[in-house]
Length: 100
Image (cartoon, rainbow, N blue to C red; front, top):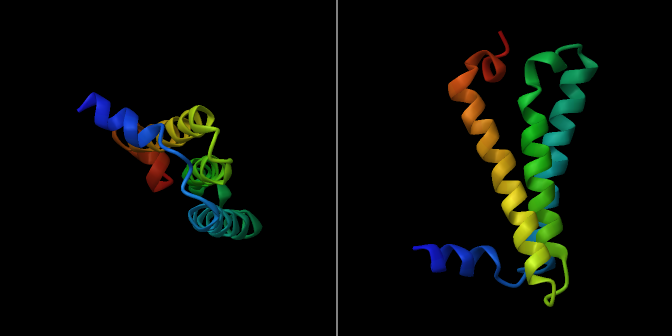
């Protein structure tokens, strides 16, 4: 199992098309947060910042040149870690996700 995870995590970056999807998702999450901030409800939606950072890190990892496998793996791992922290916060502090 461990060699499979390291093979996937430290694989060559997938290219521009996957990076554009990740950056597009990050931009959509950013637009959602800016809208919530503009109507003074940004405090309820701070969890969206985790989605912005996680998808942006994945997009950066996929946009690197093919010979930068280790850097792409570190950025992928950081993006996964950010999203896992969001998931963990749902169990430790549900009011963070609900906005209470």
